[in-house]
Length: 166
Length: 145
Image 1: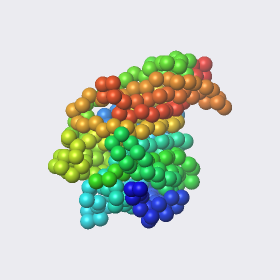
Image 2: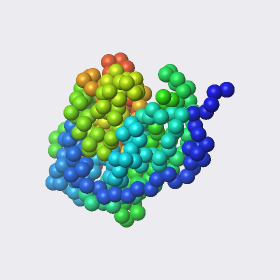
Image 3: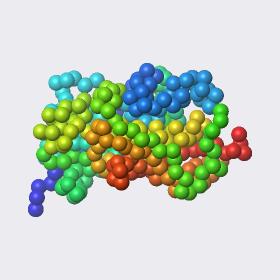
């Protein structure tokens, strides 16, 4: 029997809140993101256009919402691979240090606007070891809820990460 | 506005207008910056090759997802709304590779007056599906306009 890739400390985090984060939605930030994606949708850029389509102003691209709550990472606190543990609640997986995003699944309920104050609460939904084409890996799934300053639910997200042995 | 896609315009099997992109390293740098992502596999070639064993730096999964959502939100127009979006990272992509982002309608329904369309969506490189997924969008009804 080979040793599990999932250490006890990480396994104990299933079902717990691993991260709460808050942040302000910022138009310039989402427009920089949209520009990096080459996404020139006028809903993100043109207030007049957005108002003509039923919004009160330009709206935050749905997929950008997750970045509005990112905090500040000290360089000295980064993992050797340069990533920050802030998003994922610092789950480390010492036996599976090679990590990559697994996937994301989000239901969007309401748009976010410039200067909305967002709070995200993230819990670990599951941590399982799997066997893939390129060997064993750990699949971690989180659930997150995004609410604005009026406690309105903007989005519910499920995200996953894959961690592989070195 | 002309050209707004309506619920009546789509049927099961309708394909969204595909988007083809070859991601550049400059674009990857800006995406890392815009998402506050310091992960070295996206910009440090020595690290990507010698530590993680890849042929080159990797296109961000979230950038592939963002390009896929761009194809969708361009297709549904200003009166459409992205309701749900789900993708899985199945295979990696490197900069300079031609990627195609598209989707096909799998069903449609009107629930509580909201006209919704379900799709299978994908990021493809040639015949390889790098990122499969599903999405639901709300579209305006032509009669209601």
